Length: 299
Image (cartoon, rainbow, N blue to C red; front, side, top):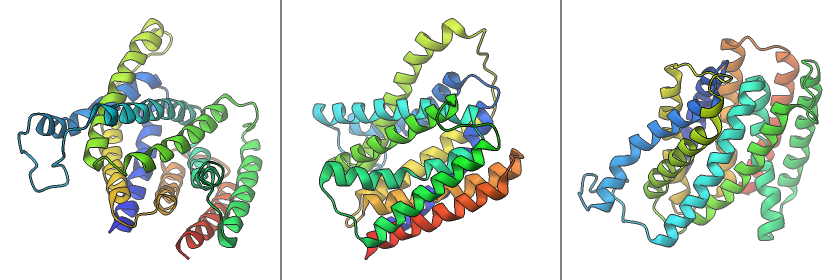
């Protein structure tokens, strides 16, 4: 069952990437991020009310959860701070870079999760996984060559710096998920994390964006609502996948990165991005690498 949750999460993430790109194009990033996360927090706020006041609104469902302890709240708050930083960097990257570049590089995150597992948790890769890592880095090289045709250098481009920061922070977030899912119910993590992220973003918007709002104007677009809807579904499926017996973080992360197929295709169609052939070759190479990583994780 957790495989199906991961697959649904992957598709929703692809649509989320497209809605995000549409929302931040020519728009101030922090207000978009704050409104989107606030809507997500409101969607799951009834779960918090029902849990904290024993209202029983969701009895017998996946949303029927117990109140968290202070220690658990601190762990979720740490997760929220990492996610808030990840999303801020990610939204800025999407604002300045083509979606057909950002989405494949995001798909490299499972490679870094596996490498981090070696360094932090002492895990060992098998032959298939090492092949997958090597092929993924070949794809990364091909994407770098493709980006140069558009005047984008990986080493000194502002958008690329934001993107790499988002990827690295996302890896840290994945390790937090591995810890959180061992002792906290999925709906609790998602509902409280959404609330904490929204509060952190509100604070950032007041301190960082409000004094510069004339230089960074914001305009409303309904795609901001779609960000919240797609992300809420994607995260709900993700947390429920991880909470199930036998679920593997590496496999779930790999399946979720399949969202690159959706976002790459829609990015090419809706945003008329360039150099699609060379980017598509790099994407195919990357998917081959992800296949070897997935196969190696299942054998």
